[in-house]
Amino acid sequence: MDKLRLDHIMGQVTKPVRYMGNEYNMVVKDPSQVSIRFAFAFPDVYEVGMSHLGMKILYHQLNERDDTYCERVFAPWVDMEEKMRQEDIPLFALETKSPVSNFDIVGFTLQYEMSYTNILNMLDLAGIPLLTKERGEDHPFVLVGGPCAYNVEPLADFVDLVALGEGEELTEELLDLYGEWKDSGESRNAFLERSAGIPGIYVPSFYDVSYLEDGRVSEIIPNNSAVPKRVAKRIVRDMDSVYFPERIIVPFMDIVHDRIMLELFRGCTRGCRFCQAGMIYRPIRERSPEKLLELAEKLVRSTGYEEMSLSSLSSSDYPGLEQLVRQLMSRFEEDRVALSLPSLRLDSFEKEFIEEMQKVRKTGLTFAPEAGSQRLRDVINKGVTEEDLVKTVSDSFASGWNSVKLYFMIGLPTETEEDLKGIADLAKLVKDCYYQTDKEKRQKGLKITISASSFVPKPFTPFQWEPQDTMEQLREKQQYLRSALRIKNVDYNWHDSEVSYMEAVFARGDRRLGQVLLSAWQNGARFDGWTEHFNWDAWKKAFEDNNLQPEFYAYRRRKKDEVFPWDHIDTGVSKASFLWMEWQKAQKAETTPDCRLNCTGCGIQRLGEGLCQ
Image 1 (cartoon, rainbow, N blue to C red):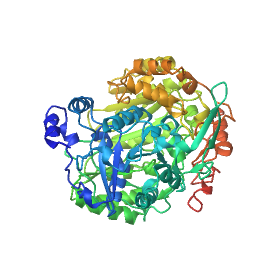
Image 2 (image 1 turned 180 degrees about the vertical axis):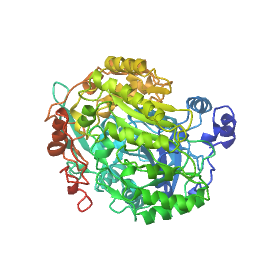
Image 3 (image 1 turned 120 degrees about the vertical axis):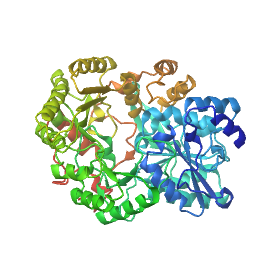
Image 4 (image 1 turned 30 degrees about the vertical axis):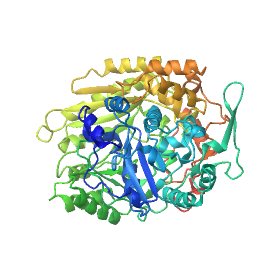
């Protein structure tokens, strides 16, 4: 690539550091000395992608291979894209500025349905044919993974390979196979056939989908005898022995999560019925405190970061968390390294723990009651109470915190106006807890942030049969909360209903949405997850042009025995004996206990035998 032209345009765009590379701990190799070039592509801007733990893990893991150079690729912001197209500069990787079309494999992580148009845009910028059927022997293979890969059907026409489950072992096996294939002289299709033999690899083109007259899926069957009828996800069994980086890239600019992230465990035992991650990442597997302390020591020394996040789906469920926090604080207090936790459970947060965390500095407290009433919290199986909230925020205010964020959802199944009113009531209750705290203990400047996202029914959850609220219903509920939350010291945030609608459409979509996606991108859709760039008109026209109704995907209640577009994917959690039973229990507001206490029979032991605790 002409680096002079690239340098010229970078001087004309916002945040040029997004495209520079050369950060501290970036891996430098000679591309001519490796046989496999892997582009890890994140379909959003640099500061979002560089906050993703999965990228940090796989980037450094793959670069420890002598035969592989893994480089990073991000979606250029709209001003940079405009300059690149004007100057005929193809999409490039940060490390060497090489065109992405020169790589062997381009691997996208699918974190969010509204990033799909960015994937098409990045492939187009790279000069890689969008459709798999149009790629030739010299084109890179397009690989995808991540949570949205569990229903990759809307992208089936555009991706060659899908990695289902955890990627550390899976990706190594795929690259080993690629190295053998590359030397064999076999066809592109031969590599796809051989890849399909790796547990956890799904090749969409090897499966055919038929539909009923009413638009529902009739069946999904292999068209190649070499592939399985159902593809099971991969599970990493031992978290202490699996790869985790001892150094990570330190960006030159602020990113969304600009800190060390220590992954405590994978999976979750709580069983929240709306939560896809809690279902697809089962079973739970923990890192030992000794391994976490070792990793923390190496990462602090190799990066110079002054904040560390203890990351997992429900970090406060980690056994011995308080002892681990005390050990980390003791070890790094002199280095002024602060600890933070993601959204916390209200029923497992002790005052002593709060006080331990603030020894260096306060890093913010975030809790997720999810629903405003106990009835609705029981419907979604959240398992926390108003008393948990009162105790936790009261202890937090007494320990010196004055800022609390609370996350809720609107549009949950069976939701009533009383449930919405409960959100405002809880905000007032938190405010009362602050003013009931001794003035000598509490800090001045109370700030309560209430964020309410719109419920999106997701595959592989008990609510996958449920319809989403209409956009009109969601807008009415948002308006109600805007009025009810006009409370001093309380801020209210919400999501655009159109974006949530499209997320629901693609979350449970089938292959026919591929043409809609292509049309929307051709109509100008990109960065759909960014409010200022979401183009509702582009999406409406795309559906009209392809004679598909988005309501069919978002607003329709599914029947018990309906074939879902993702039914040929096996996450280990049983659709019939667990998810359906959980959906029935939700209708009656019956709760299911934490499966650490008693096995709930979800079925995961079939894939993760011996791993359930």
